[in-house]
Image 1 (cartoon, one colour):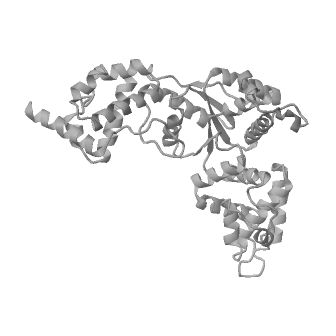
Image 2 (tube, one colour):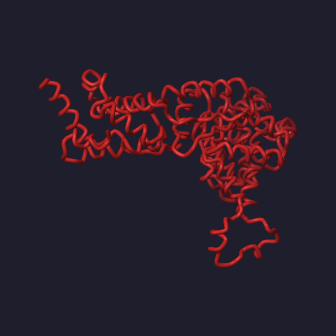
Length: 406
């Protein structure tokens, strides 16, 4: 008994030295989550993977309230779909330069080698392997560009944009003196007028049509299928709604006289953004997942798509509802986090001595956490952070601390 008490004391001392295993309660698309899904959500994950693997273009809504773990669900999906290009964007961050931002995320996810491979393969298809001067390989770059333009015209909306992409691809592959500048252009760097002129380009990728067209080339010619995960999708709807009575009374002056239309600038901006999202559906093989906070938001999106183009309803799939944790999920989530934490600090005695225990918490505390949080994962983590911070920072006995949470 004394030996086991010493082991418990050692674990508590280690926690006081290293800090709490629970340090944040909000998942982000930038910081990777290593903890897998709880058991009750595994079936949902597999159903989404099944949809992705059996369908081409679609828009799949995932509905979950605040704190239900939609972003954490993205990381679980990314770990399972490691053989896909799965890219996360938050609509909060992409209001401006929408296609440029998404393209940049895809390039960061895929890596420059994928882009080089695509450039090489496309130029070969356009005739870059033909020899212009006898034995030595020297392609006729103008002839290659002409062939490329003839092949691509019917598949791309903007002729100026596809001409820029063709010129950049061929310069990268067939002109060694321009390869570095062309690669900088592909990476989305700001290119000055002199370098653009040298590459025979009109714009860099900040121009909307160029970034959209380059995104289309990248996705459609990648050897790996692509999924775009758009978080906070209801943001576009909130931008379209008029001000409430309270907000209107707080206005110092009426801005509507500044605009020829009675629509607010935010509403017009939101409608343009929705048009851009819909345009993504024209990129062959691009699967889109959106997250929404409620079924009401889903119905609004559905109505808006029907207004824009009723054919869009064919690609808008029935939503996946992300429920709160069940009680068994909490205990599994708690244990997984502790095992991950102690494994990372190489405290492997934990697995031997406490594998069948909830120590330093207990079953009654976990029941309290579940009941107080109503199964909301964010609220669960907030409570775990609070309790473990007390354990780490307080000089009170563990039993005294836990008494408040039973």
